[in-house]
Length: 377
Ligand SMILES: Cc1ncc(COP(=O)(O)O)c(C=O)c1O
Image (cartoon, rainbow, N blue to C red):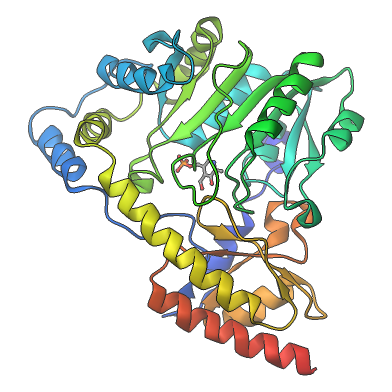
């Protein structure tokens, strides 16, 4: 009844966990900030829809917003201009647009394992073959360049990178970014850099992949920084010739990104980043809390996340992390088993600290009770 490609992908494991949760569960499975968007942004959205902003706009996005994004990226490469930017209907759409624009059937695409749930399926939907590269706990979830070298074949077309990472929270230092660029250049690979968590950073300095060569595509989103996951607005930054090609596919998927949301985000840029900074401050405090609570539990090892709002503990409870996640679900805490993000996520749980401190304390107390019970078993 459906095409082959449809059979080759599944609904994400994360969604399935939500659907079987008991009522009033504490949700530590969330992939979105538990904050409201900045007031200026909400007001600008309302103003836009009440004042005629309800129409199609340009395919690549409103000129003023593209310009604003370009100005931000010009700090990384002074040559960046509006034509390098395409506003998309979310980071997810941006990733799909990249996959359909770049990959031919049979191409191989290096994707992080564990990594965000869309990279592999998008490659498959484009007819390509995702080739997972390892990010292991022992290396603090940093890529191993030697392992990458071994995975390259004449069919390798691109490497997808994600720093700060969902699900591990790890972030590449500048030296790793440089090494990956050198690796990609040597093998003529396109770098697809998903930087949606670039502003949610606790330790160290974020290094963007932009401005290092002309074959890198940046995927970004307003979902997390402005706490507007439901609005569906993101963007791509690429060389001008690549941007022209990306815009063709983007047009055929989406026609154009939502107009009122673009007007609102533009107002958010004008208002400054105080709201984002306040949100990140709160996340930082929660990260410390979660790290301390998890480290005091039996059979739990944690690499403190440098960015994003996830922690990815390794469990040693004598059962699979999927069994642990189901046991915790029955006790009223939603978590995500690590293998939802690839085979090397097995044995890990992803916990999101985009939940209030009170919820984190209560939820993690349930996790502690379970950990102690498993330790005693
Ligand atoms: C690493 C990463 N990339 C992209 C996205 C997509 O974000 P959105 O489609 O909301 O812009 C997410 C969302 O969770 C993510 O975690």
